[in-house]
Image 1 (cartoon, helix red, strand yellow):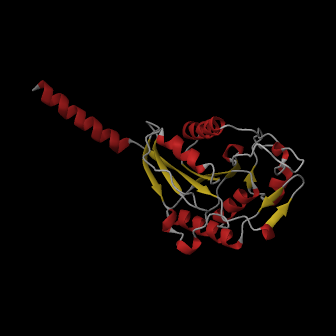
Image 2 (cartoon, helix red, strand yellow):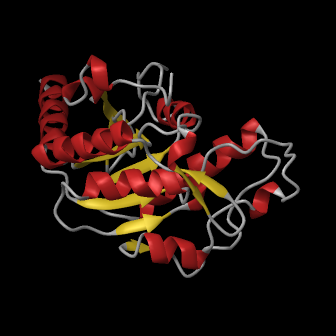
Image 3 (cartoon, one colour):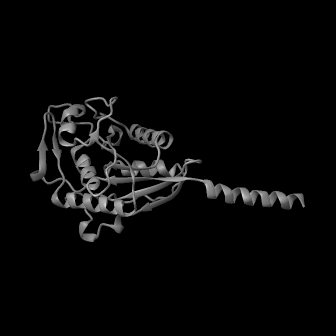
Amino acid sequence: MLKKRFFIFIQIFVILAGVFSETRTFYFTRHGQRGDPAYQQKFEKCVEDALTPKGQKQAEFLGEYLNSIKFKGTIYISPFYRTLQTAEGAASRLPEMKKIAEPRLQEKSKNKDSSGIKIIERCLTKKEIQDNFPDVTVPDGMKFPWRFDNETKKDIDRRIAELIDECISNTEGDLFFVCHGGILPVVIRCMRKRGSDFEHRKAWNCCLYAFTIDTETKRVVKAEDLTKNYLNDEMITDNMK
């Protein structure tokens, strides 16, 4: 009799835990199509790829989809021109929300460069970000130049894991991250360590990966690739390929 009552208590506890548990979703995307020299932008110490017309349209389709699923949250953006432009295009289809430049989302850096300018200096300045994307918040503590140099695989895994950990612990609501094709596999690895069964796959321009996280356990309870919900085969690209 005592064992039966204990078993019933455990069942009730599990049911109530499920009822009262809360979740939040982290959405990750790669920037829109880029790579056509005709759309490059020259800045003080760098030449940045801008989105192609198709890349702009991909970003808008992404924003329309996020709006259709009622996304309301903060947008974190790698400070490259193409990612800022992607966020701007997506946000144009969304209600007004906060957009923050986040250097830890930046693409992996090459270790060698022949331009004569150090890799860490080949990036947008604070003024260039603010002039071109006035709706984007540049955090007070953001260092300039913001590029990382000579990173190892462990370095990149560490910075993405730290960002995800901080966002889970120190922010609220759903979040949208605009990053790069080389960073999304790192995101997947980090989420798999939190219980996700999301498999590695090709990261298309403006793809959308969604990871739903239990706020109590901080574990991933659902993972989805939502890309085909808004991009048809004609709009699926890997930059200019």
